[in-house]
Every structure is written in structure tokens, then in C-alpha cells.
Image (cartoon, rainbow, N blue to C red; front, side, top):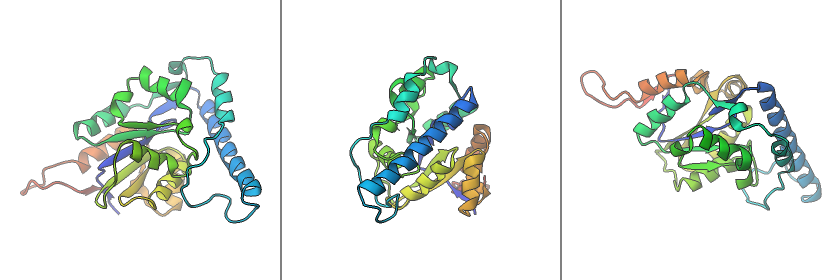
Length: 245
């Protein structure tokens, strides 16, 4: 099935917008984040809801701000400047400028902390100018795979999606796909998860969304975007609405 042209785009950060110079560090961060998420949900289920109902509630309810002990401990022991830890993924700026030239509003969400990490990355690599809103771990109660980060990004962009809006969410992990699909239950617009690399690609196929939702690099994505936004049909000058990745 062809993929629709986006009117709004949200990017994941680690592993998507930027990649770690040492991939092992990214795996450690992802592992600790997943463990802390699942552990927190389990203890909330035991002590707050007395073991009743699903461990991960389906509804979206802001709650007390988390302490973020794991994240803060990780970044407390990190002493290297961010440019020695991460770098923008090849082709990222071409894609960002493509969207900017067409007035497509962009935002960025991350399970990582903004203070001492995410905001430093945006500043160091000149990325902040592209994003209308950013959401980091300290800005939310529930991290991905919960939909709260994506919903918060839309709120901060001051966008109330309409039924004809198509929101791309680009991420490299299974939880990015899960979060995007969950967020679609709370808005009128359509959210399309775009898997960036293998981990998210597996989730795309498991959800029967089709290979058109998978890209392996921003260079590939740029080629797709050129096809999607091509304005000239032979003979009538109509605008293309869909294309296949």
C-alpha cells in the first residue's frame, strides 16, 4: 500500500536524528531505559492498583513527575562533550531542509534527558532551528513506548491535528513504532510510523504495515520525499499524494 505525504513530521533523536559514535553506549542506554520503564510500571501496578487491571494502562493520564534516577545517573558519569559521543546521521540535514523549504512543521522527541545531553546536541550541531518543539525525558511522565511524548510534541507545536493531517513519526526502535500507533488513538489526524533501521523494521512487519514504512538511511528517505512531493504530473500539473518507499 502506498504511503501518504506528511503534513507534520516528528523525529526520534538517539539512533535516528543522531547516531552514537560508540553503538554499545546506545544499547546500554536503551536497555536501561526499557528496564526502568517496565520496572516502574510493575511496581505502580503492585502498590498503586493492587495488582488489578493491565500493567500498562491504555489511557493517557499525566501523573507526578518521575525522579529519573537512572537517566540522571548515566549523564552524571558522562564527562565527554556530546560531539565525542554522537554525530548527526548522514543525510539528516538534507531531509530537514527539504521539509523546511516546504513549511512542514517538525518536532523531536527523546527518552533521553534534555539537560546536559539533548539540548547540548541540538545546540552543538545547529539542529534547534529546524524543530518547532522538542520533548525530553524530564518533560513527560511516561516515556516511549507510551504515546505521551508524541502527544506532548503536538501540544508544544500548538497543532491540533485535523482528519486530513498525516503525521510521520520517524524512529529506529520497536518502541517508536508502538508509541506512534498508540498515539493515533488520541488524535484526529493519521500517524504513520516510519522505521529507521532494523529494530523498528521488525516491529513494522509484525504489525503488518508493509515495507513501504521502512527506510535504512536519510539518503533513501530523501529520494522518497522527492517522489512524494513531485508537483508535476505529465499533462495536468497535479500534485502527487502518495508514493512507495
